[in-house]
Amino acid sequence: MFSILVVVVVRVILIALFLPFSALDKVLNFKQAVGQATEAAASRVLATGFIVVGFGIEVAMSLAILTGIADRLAAFVLALYCIVTALLWKQFWKLADFRLTGDSRGRELFWDFLKNLALAGGFLVLALGTDATSVRRFWHHPLASTHPYVAAARAEGS
Image (spheres, rainbow, N blue to C red):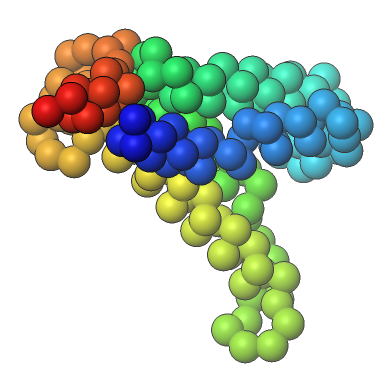
């Protein structure tokens, strides 16, 4: 039972940014989210589409990771999502005030950019595994699950 609890807690920590927080923020502050998305979108309609698709990705992929159903593909999708959002909304290189010391919005945005990439790395470990064999296995069977709770239950029984 302890192993299963640890697996659940680790997965909750991994997706907590998206479900419930970011997804709920998109619902509660939809107008502001669309406003932020217009920074990267050519039109308000496209920005609205970004938010709706982002909400769907955050909810569906997070639930897949929590349940262990096609969790490897879901983790891969969330990794790509983290990278894309970093590139679209964490563009520290565009700010003129990037400094290593003192107040700097550019440096703050740089740390946010790196956090997105680090989170993507965590999702990629879940998706691709930690060795070349598991990476190959992912590309051959991307819809396969890691069966996290079955493996944990087996470990408890031995």
